[in-house]
Amino acid sequence: MAAQPRHIFAWRLLVFAAALTPIGWWSYHVAVGAAGPEPGRYLLLNLGQGALVLLLCTLSLTPLTKLTRWKGFSVIRRQLGLWTFSYASLHLLSYLLFILGLNWTALGEDLQKRPYIIVGALALLILLALAVTSNRYAMRKLGKRWKSLHKWVYAALCLVLLHFLWVVRADLAEWSGYAAVGLGLMLLRLPAVAQRLPRFGGRPKRARA
Amino acid sequence: MLIKPRNHLTLGENDVTPESIYLSRRKFLGGVAGLGLAASLPRAAWAGPDYDDVAKAKGPEWFEAKLGDTRWNAITAEDKITPSDDATHYNNFYEFGSDKSDPARRAGQLKTVPWSVTVDGEVGKPGQYALEDLITPSRFEERIYRLRCVEAWSMVIPWLGIPLAEVIKRAEPTGKAKYVYFETLEDPKQMPGQASRFGLIDWPYREGLRLDEAMHPLAFLAVGMYGRVLPNQNGAPLRLVVPWKYGFKSIKSIVRISLVESQPKTSWNMLAPNEYGFYANVNPEVDHPRWSQATERRLPNSLFSPNVIDTQMFNGYAEEVASLYQGMDLRKHY
Ligand code: HEM
Image 1 (cartoon, each protein chain N blue to C red):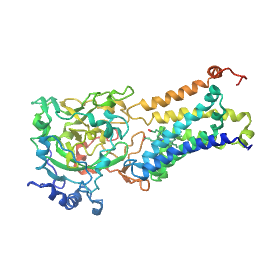
Image 2: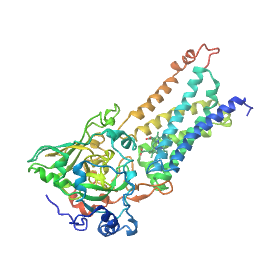
Image 3: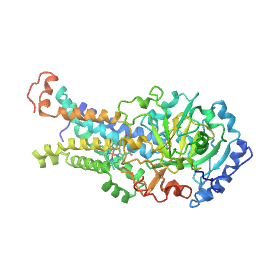
Image 4: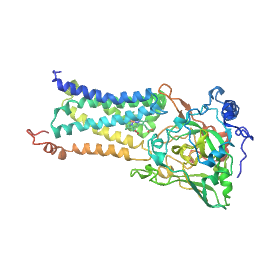
């Protein structure tokens, strides 16, 4: 990989540290007994919401780049995508370890019977596929198909929102907030909207697709 | 219908037991009474705390006055009692928010004194009763019950209160009364969760029991827990405790008790009838669509041991309550 300017490297490092911080914070809460009587579920829910927040952040980078034309947003896209996948994997791991107590049969049953788990697993599979093809080698190999493959991230977003909707018990306030942001980000990718974006961010020097 | 309490469930203590003595006797009594209730569990599992960790709180005068005459340990469980800090900071009480930590943070402003309860419907003595008038004719009892949430976690809590049957009898149900209907306070000013525009529950919260279930000696009206007055987040000042049913049946902050002729509408059943039945008896064989009911996590747990245990039919109270459901298809009437 070509050497990058120092400030870009520092920016990436900062993002890395910022993405790691919540995990440290939650672990600290668990360690000092401030996570309530069910620390495993505390981690499960926080990691799930963390993964969703990271997914939304990742998806906001392209529109943000267009709006501001600051390159800093696009250089962290892959990193945030991988963080999303990591949080989601840890979320699944928490479920397996702390809720099911490593009962694989129970996981197998859930994967057959429970719609919200099936939908979550499909989302995770998509994120997995995107994670393993996020390197330059895969990009080169896949060529044009890479872009269409990575559009599946929007399918993952819809599945995650559905997964979340199905675990809501009695109040949709939190979910509606996430869904509104997700919907907004998807609207921004509609060609008609996307083409207009750069105009709000100042005069475009070059047309961008 | 009247059911006599079974001997192995109820330990009679006719004389007044000062608190200091009952606390030192707790271990002994727990062992004895537990034999009948949960013989399958090893006796050593019971190491009851003496509620040392309980935040003290003074109840209203009538409550404190009755405490001295309480039949402590009237019903015990072999299970280890959940630390009160957990039982009071991990609550589903959607009137105060949907996060389990919301009730403890937001229930402070609920005004529980004075409190009145409307008793109406098919009764000979309808009226609006001050809470103390409803409760004081009966003697306080302490009952240690397992509480099984429909979300597959459970706790063990020492409640303080009186049998529901006694309140119902005093209201003099007519021959038409077949069900008991309960309602929680509705007041969005005091209960911020009710003010949410994204809430799915049609307030007030409603629950109900068949009359014979309500008259069962295990059905309980609690006004306290851990030897003190109920904290707001646990349903102060008056809540139901039906230990063989999922926790959502045990309605909190009750303002109405009606005896009615037909099966009443109940909140969770109205919201998602395929998930929450009217009966909601704890049953490991009938899954909730979103999660299995075969096991439960006994709280508190830790990362290293999720404390997953098998869920028992009727939450371990089958011997006492199974007869209420004889001949019923419990898969259909979940
Ligand atoms: C096999 C894959 C997955 C499994 C088994 C799984 C399991 C769970 C479970 C058990 C819950 C809690 C349900 C409850 O409230 O009782 C949950 C909630 C949640 N999950 Fe997943 N999940 C999976 C994939 C994902 C993915 C890929 C994401 C996001 C990228 C995600 C995000 C969430 C969110 C946002 C919540 C709600 C958290 C809250 O209520 O605060 N999950 N998941």
